[in-house]
Length: 223
Image (tube, rainbow, N blue to C red):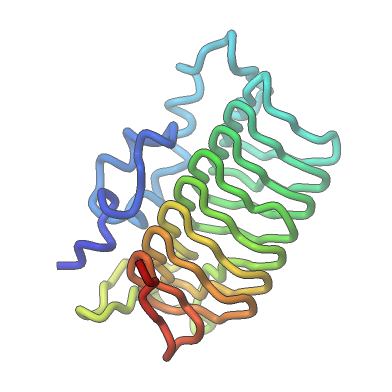
């Protein structure tokens, strides 16, 4: 069951430095409690020719561009060729992939961004995983805690999955496009190549290669 939500069907694992971590579990949200310790273990093994250790469990690729006004709290790894722009706020337990963009006033917390991910304008991404080339439009955010503070459940057409997690934002597969000012509610899972209309409020699982127009209007993309 739940084949579409499994890591093997969501992500190109060769496009992240966290391949070993993700390969160790079945569903992507299972790594959320493990990201910080994984970074602390991986960081010291990174090439000193390619990465600079900035103290407090922060490793930054020497060819990454980090604006002086950006703030990075460890544990964190900023990959090769990445950009961390003006006033970005990285709160810890964050892996920013190669060639990824963390934009102005964007906040990250307990996340894995695969290579080439873009969260470029006023985004909040917490307790989430964004696959290869995923993109979140300006102002779109993940909501990572339910208003009633109960444990997050992933709602799917095959049934509900109990995650056991209080904090769980969104899992975005490869090449997902999220429209501007959308909210991804706790436990959202978007399969690869999903498009979300601007200003949407998304909940539950959207299968690969579908368009989310509204909660009751999710249509398959034409070939």
